[in-house]
Image 1 (tube, rainbow, N blue to C red):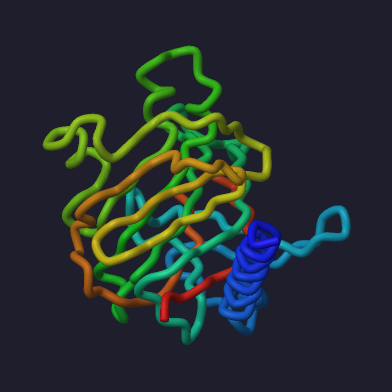
Image 2: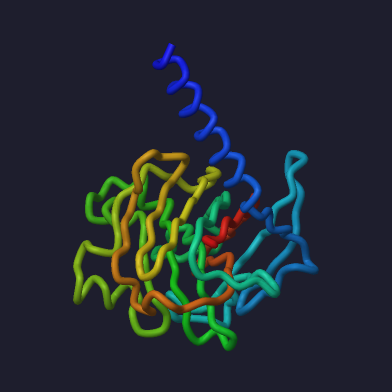
Amino acid sequence: MKKTIIATVIFLTTTCTGFINSINAQVISLNKDNLVPHLVEMSIEKRNGKEMVRVVKSRLVIEADEPTYVKIKDFDFQDGTIELKVMGKLLPNASDSARAFIGLSFRINNDDSKFENIYLRPTNGIAMNQIRRNRSVQYFSYPDFKFFHSRKTNPGEFETYADIAPGEWIKMKIVVKGANAKLYLNDSKNPNMIVNNMKMGADQTGALGLWVDIGTEGFFSDLIVTKNK
């Protein structure tokens, strides 16, 4: 009898915890009234009955790892969990250096001069070159710690391989706590990448941005944010 009672209590605790998490989660509406494009072209499209945000980097921005995103209006984030679905495709006129770059910027400050970012290179996930495959996922911090900085000072620490491909929906989940972040792809139980000691520190807060880079037609949907209380 005692064993039966204990098992029942554990079950109820697990159920209640899941219920609380669902209450804290906030579905972010991705419509024109809620989005602010910054150095990108943006449109709302509907494909196969599903609405999504299409984002393409401005041709006027030449450098890589820049603030080329669509910001979520009037939304402040510090710690918590960000979930969204992304799909990166190469544009017809994409250069040889394009990788269908797509990802998420977070803790963006008011004047877009600082932010953290984790993004994907989907074409690298299927490349037949091992070095490129090892660079399927990237963390950078704008403006002083872009991908080429990390490869010079911390080779291999801020990028990794992931089983991803262009033209496919990829679920990203980024868990942020203090100066650390963990990336989970496609409901993986273990993180695909761990970022310790993010360059902006533990106390920064700011907006979220749907981010793309050169040669990419990016699509975003199903943005859900759970803030830590």
